[in-house]
Amino acid sequence: MEIWEKIFDVITSETVKAGILASLLATSIWVLGSKYGPILLEFLLRFRTRLFWGSSRYFKDKTIIVPDVLEIDYPPLKDLFFLKINRNHHINGPRKVYGESNISSIQYINQTFGKFTRHAPKIKNDLEVKNLWDANLICLGSSSSNIKTHDILNRQFTHFARFIQDSKGVAIQTFWNNKKYRIDGRYDKGLVMKIRSPINKKFWIIICAGLGSTGTSASTYYLMRNWKSLFWKYFNKDFCLILNVDGGNDLSVDKIAEYFY
Image (cartoon, rainbow, N blue to C red; front, top):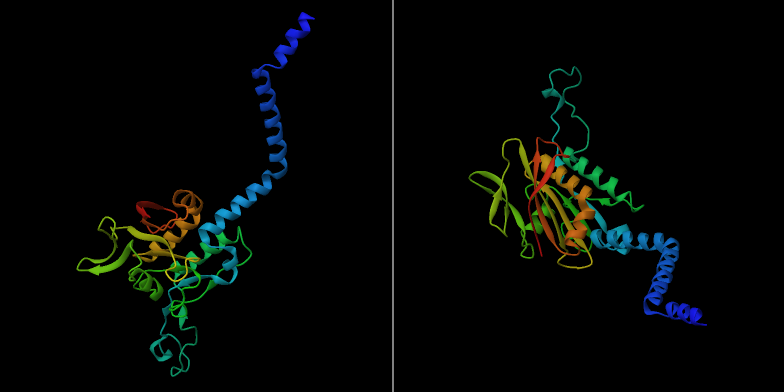
């Protein structure tokens, strides 16, 4: 009897009870995790995507890429001496086209969005969306080339940065440290900004712009490549990044300044 009493005392001790409970809890977590883990992970990934880029409810019809448009004035054929045809005719072709940096930027965006949605963003030029605020906007190009970017950066609700031109040329001026970032030799400068729409807080406005043409496409590349880490760092906050682009290569881009609130 004494042996069985000792065994009973051991089994009913607090240490053994705690071990049994821990074992049961671990087994339950493993069973539930193996069954519902993928579902929970998918939910978290969708939550992250919607929180950074905008609610899926508004994504299909309300996410718009806004590139700047180049106006082309084709010369009359009489000015092209090497063409031996009727020189009073004009060359036919589109008058409004997108620049090379915008084409690269749109490609980066579509490649990224294609991983988590079947709905490609719409593409509209800056004049078409001049008065549009009820949408998730991705503006490509600086204030000098994109009317929408100019409008956003020169409104009072923007407290991050703006593009300026002084006696030394064009620059990105940041308000938080009162610095001016310029093209330095082969190094272009770019800006990535993400803010809430001032009219409808359900939507986001993103600007990817540069001082030179490479600055815009490199800024877009940086955002598309790093948006997941930017989400975890800034979560649901407005932020602004200043980037340095080396040698006209979109892939060679680094962050040199940041601010968020």
